[in-house]
Figure (cartoon, rainbow, N blue to C red):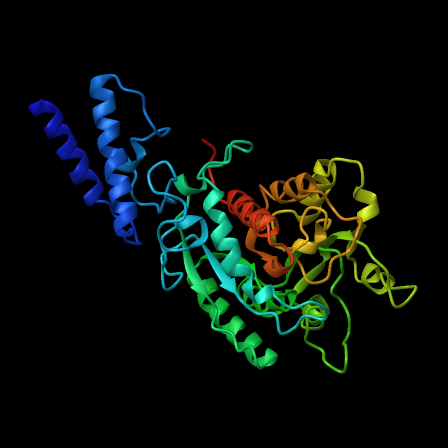
Length: 374
């Protein structure tokens, strides 16, 4: 028995001497300690290990790890993305979840300002390992939730400035942002900061709409214009832009012609019906090459039968398994940023839309450069 106590104390010391950049919360520290102790005791006593492999809490404590519902109830603790530690800045992180609670640029139903909050709440269902792709992001990268950009709900242009400045700091820290929107306006100032560091980037854009309008009601900045503004400012490598899931009615008969002339590849939703999108993503990977790529996913790219909680729904969209194929198809690309936008929880009281968004954000994390398989 003395030997068991000594081993348990050794496990305690191993966890307490970890070198993680973000200090765990008291709950997570207790959980990590308990798993470390059980790993040692299980090895000694021949007991069943509870986590695979549990010894990583001892030997590899430099990464943040989400809380497990096997140890801490899902409704408990601070509401962060995947119940990761909260950190005030991106310094020292490889990737960070960040919210942009803005919907001032919406043209139809508002409510996306509450998207980040609800995505975080539903993300408690998302676990550490991707059992399909076998990606182990929390064994590979230092990840944390760095909170929300303090947007100005009364001034869209000022909000864009605030977003751009916040993302300039994230890019300067060498961190890859995984953004929870917010309406699609936010991608414009994000790409300003991304292109400032990387130059014109490739874009994989999943959406029901091209978001390439010139203006509406005399305004050049709203959620229907972000990619037109990006083209105007030279933020995109237009020969490496793919838009997937586009559909719906139009105000003009030639709505896609100009963008095809720019070199965009537009994949209408009808071209995605009844098929796997893995072959499409193989072509997209070849088109993108090894240069920087940004992934922007509007939840309305998915059919409202699966994701009704959005402001501008269009029938005939992608299925959730096609959405997974698209995001997983980004693995191997030089992803420098991702976003998931337009979740408006008020239109889906079941929470399914926010849950879908949380899972897609996790899949984006799993697709980042540097993520190893287990």
